[in-house]
Length: 156
Image (cartoon, rainbow, N blue to C red; front, top):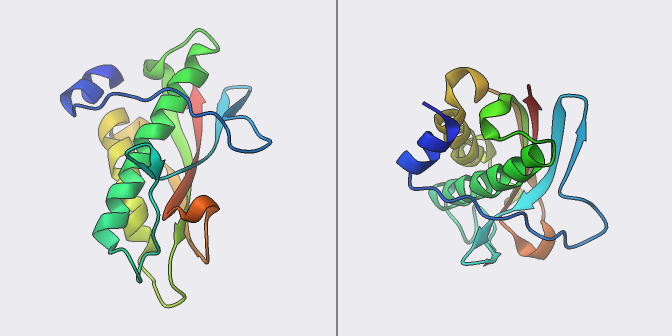
């Protein structure tokens, strides 16, 4: 099953690339690797604001991380298109780095990040979707967002 078939099966419509809010680009390709800049969680087009362990639960933040994965795939699709390819040319999601806006005592950042990782695995499959990962708790994120995630992918 193609990546696009999986997205359709999950009722996911990929968004266009967001315009950067500062001095950076949404993605950079070098060789066969595409590096995606960090994407913050958005809900209804606005930053999904919250601090996990204070104003949000792990499950709510996991949904936010899933929403970030959808935005990341939209940017990845644009990056692939820039080199005349599509998401079916993604050989591997190489690395995911997740920052979770959380309290000093919160310790379930890895469970929040599963919202992104699980969706990538479902869309790209158990081989191409399996990736290395880091999940960190941070004191704050841009615009008060609850989660920010960046991604590295290999294309073929």
